[in-house]
Image (cartoon, rainbow, N blue to C red):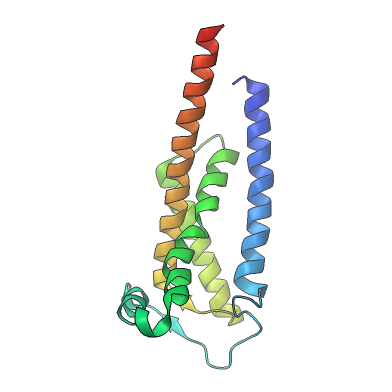
Length: 158
């Protein structure tokens, strides 16, 4: 891939990243579908690591598959695009950089939920969101390796 194509890919990554952040803000703070209809009277928070994860696994029968999936897997999946797009949009990328930025964004989201009293502050969410960002980075690395092999084969055929 030449420099012009690489620049286009980074621009596309930046556009997708901005759209993703807009989606994230809507989904986490404004979406009626996910129970974000307003400020809660009694605010809940969790500062004990793995407490909510254990609760969702222990009471999976009573809570239902959708609640368990949306809390555990959903918190991971919602941050996978972050790890992918931030790596795609940036020249300086790396595992620890993505880990740090994923942790920082997730902490920011949880603090905003604490301040605005929309949703609930949960350290388990920070863990799961950060894991999702890291998985997005790993997905980017795999896709980037496949792309590089494809372009290397294309150049050899010429």
